Image (cartoon, rainbow, N blue to C red; front, top):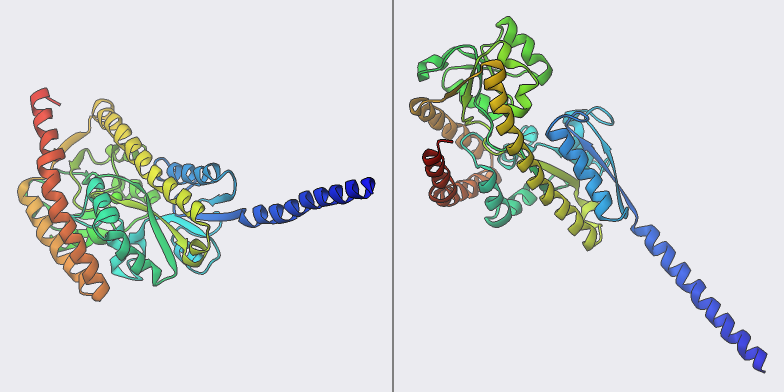
Length: 364
Ligand code: CA
C-alpha cells in the first residue's frame, strides 16, 4: 500500500516534470525566430553600414537569441535597391535602407527620409514620434505590406564640393552636379544640370571635369572619397538632405505575428541606434572637418542668403508637385508642413539661437 502510494506519487511527480518539459520546450522553440535583414549599404561601409550591422547584432543580443538576426549587406542576398520588394514579398523579414529610394512607388516615401528644406534630426523625431508622422508612415508602407521604424540619421548634410566658387544664384546655371532625388529636382529648377552617379564613380567624373560639383554626406564620409583633390570649395549647409532618417522596414504580417515583448525589443533597438549613429556622426564630422581644412587645404564656404532663397523657392515647388500625387501624399505633406512650422519655431529660439550665441561669445 505504502509502496503503491509512493509509486503513484513518484509517477505523478515524474509525469509532472515530463508534462512541464513537453509543454515548456516547444513553447520556447516556437518563440525562437529568425530575422533575415537585407540592407542597401555595403559591408562595413563607414557610418551607414556599420550602424546597420550593429543594430542587427543588438536585436539578437537584447532578445537573448529568441530573435536571431541574419544580416546581409547590399548584394550579399539581394541588390541594394531590391530590399523593399524582398521584404514586402516575405523573402526577408526586414530591410535597412532609406525610404526615399521608393519614391517611384509613392512620392510620400521621400518625406520619411528627408526632403529639400525638410526637417533636422530633432525635428524629424518630433514629427515621427509625437506629431502624427509614424501614423502616416504606417498608412503609406502598410499599403505595401511593410511596417517601418526609424533606425538612424545622417544629420544635416554638406552642400557639396564645387570646382569653383558659387557667389550668386547665376553661378548655379549650367552647373553639372551629381545630386540625386528631390535635391536634384531643386537644382534643375535653379538652372543647374543634376546628374545621378553611384558613389564609386563620382571621383573620376569630378577629376576629369565631366561634372563640376557633387554632394555626398558630410566631412567624415566625404574625407575618404578624396573629392578635395578635384574640388576645393566645400559648401554648407546642404538644403537637400537636412536630417536623413535611415529606416528599418519589416514584413507587416511577420511583424504583427511577433510577441509583444519582441516587438518592444525591436523598437527599443531601433531608437537606440538612431541616437548612437547620430552622435557618432556628430563626433566624427567635427573631427574630419578640421582634418580636411588642415591636411588638405579645403576651403569652407557658406551658401549666400540669395542662393538659399532661390533654393527655398524651388524646394517649395518640388514638394508641392510631390503632394499633388494623391490624397495620402497631400496629407503627409500637410502634416510635415505643420511639424516644420511649430518645431522649427521652437528650436529656432532654443537650440539654434543658443548655439549661435554661445559660439559667437566663445569664438567657436
Ligand atoms: Ca547625400
